[in-house]
Amino acid sequence: MTDAALPTHADEPHVEQNENRLNRLRAGVLGANDGIVSTAGIVLGVAGATIDSAPLLTAGVAGLVAGAVSMALGEYVSVSSQRDAEKAMLAKEERELREDPEDELAELAAIYRSKGLSEETSMQVARELSAHDAFAAHVEAELKIDPDDLTSPTQAALTSAVAFTLGGVLPLLAILLPPLAWRVPVTFVAVLLALAVAGWVSARLGGAPPVKAVLRVCLGGAVGLAATYGIGMLLGTAVG
Image 1 (cartoon, rainbow, N blue to C red):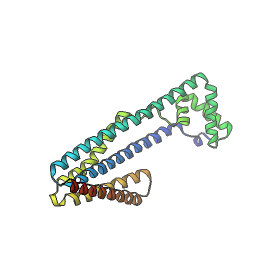
Image 2: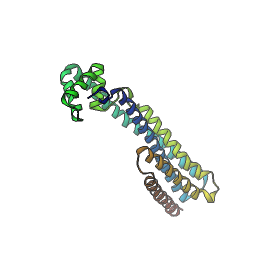
Image 3: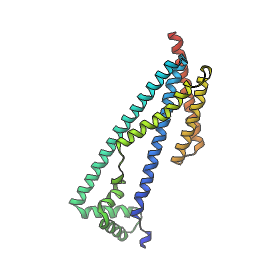
Image 4: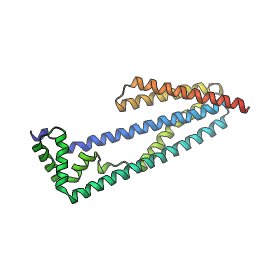
């Protein structure tokens, strides 16, 4: 086996970084989708009871702010827990390399042997990668973690909050800007179009069929919007 046929350690971080960026972008799209659906559900629920601007604005802004804060806090806690776990695994790997390097070398060789390399080639790859950077070689092969690209909880929280807010602004504007008679239908159409775009982008990022994703998210959104509007009408009538 020639050197060109061996796994290229230098190329892996680039692939992993691209995957991390795609994951962050996908999370942003999903956050925007949540903002669209959540805010639209609130304003259409209120619109079922009244189409006056003041209650719609109050409910929409309150829901938008509460949702963005909730998304940010949830993402911060989740990513912080994940980051703590990754740091603990990295520290454990570093300690094992320091205390028992030979056993770790054999473990690394076994990983490459399980991928189809011969015993001799696996040990050669393990020795060469360990000589270059033992810690990087082990965390990449065993843990699939890039120590230099751990997700930031603060960045994840801000991304979620911004994505949710941007998504939520659309139904809020759609319910407030048109004439009274057009507020509900315009909001329905605007939200479904936005969901279609979000579903298409999410599907493309994940490599899934876009048409099915768009139909699924639009159908679910339409049912949810109709349900919240209907509940608003029922409650508005009962209270009135």
